Image (cartoon, rainbow, N blue to C red; front, side, top):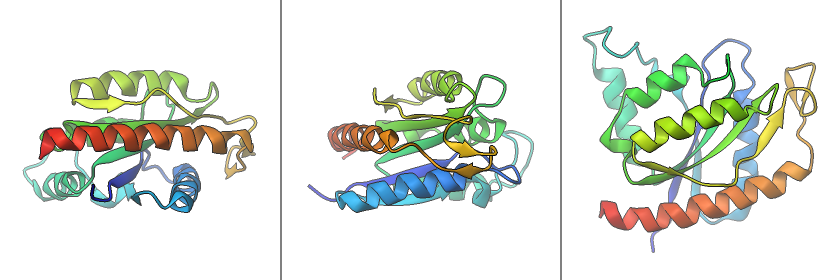
Length: 180
């Protein structure tokens, strides 16, 4: 079997966001495993206009092309008003078939560990034919971030990230057979 390509998608674009810290932490755990190609995919880099509000299709085409190279995903999902960010929802809506028959894990954070955002994200992923895995690391703004801005995860989260990655890889490999 060929090596799988897994994108770690940063789900926020705002100034002062902490998702790059969380994404790099997940990537460091993933890279230490040596079992797939892992890369950070920052939706901010694609400068996606709101869906339907621009005649410039180049950003969405570049986004779709990037997604097409990936076999699975890990979403870094922050909770905003009990849901995902508008930027992440727009990025999800800005592609279609490129999501289909792939697997995803979710690492969420917020005052309640981002659980409500992750639950909303699961429903959206189902519509896009993305199989989300069961293991879901939840990070608390109160215990895993210093002053809400410096990421200092508790040691127990490393085991959860590894268990999630085990599931993402297993499902990504199985679903890849549907896309060939």
